[in-house]
Image (cartoon, rainbow, N blue to C red):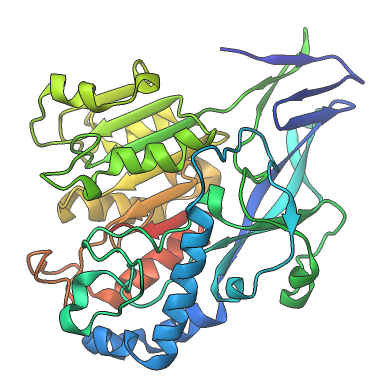
Length: 405
């Protein structure tokens, strides 16, 4: 375990972290802001969910969907040589008109007071974009609406498209250390934006005070938990559905190497096949747990308890939840929504969550057409309207939540 010990009055930097005159500053989540386009879907989803394919196909929504997915593809389709190993790697640029469709995560700057051993609000406001919650909460150009599906040149219609997802490293962001008030939409358009890279709220150092030596700062880790992983490169016989490879390509290979990559799969996997599929630089980092986790209180395999053991609030933690089991997924989501992040709740530990119209990156299996057929007509789990609320509520807790295909 590596610590940085700073005597009074010193100046140092660890990668992207700066400490000057014994004052260390970090960024914390402030609030979530739905875009006007997202807000329009929330206003109508309760009725639109009964004919969602027809609604998405309306000219105004088809046009908006093409703008959103095209923009997301522009941001995520980078040459493999493009990496961000430190903060603010990319040059700034002006606001892109398509980004007005995107929703926003807002952040505040805080600075550490070694006398009180607490962080206090300081000047500084930040904003980062995230894809809006709209339509079916999945790529509208995928095949799920059958003959009513939207079509766009180059679209992924395999049933496993992730082209609608805007992970943190590919999401435009802007910030200032001079202002104490968040920018208005018009002011933010005048600011300089970075389209890619690590924003200052990606992770942070963890300070601790020792009266013998002063303040010690422990660097953060990048951690990924894939709940419902299958094999690294293939799920069933479908390579396009493999989650391990996708997360490796979108995070690890972009200069954000995972220190821990935990794959959990309840279906029996062959160890030799599983480890043969992982890249060389994940050997020793990748852990396969070929057992099912639970939400049973006191169980050593309790999901939330494991997360709390492994992840610290200062780490960058990406959580994928897709185990096709509502009795496990629903309690996990319920726990995250109901906990108190200021009192040790696990929701404070999650930076990015991917799931199926569930939260994180997770797949939320609910009952609505056309998804009730591939999801086996799930009962008692709510509808698409509920999924909208779940994802928004997670984002309101500071979790960049995305819908997994």
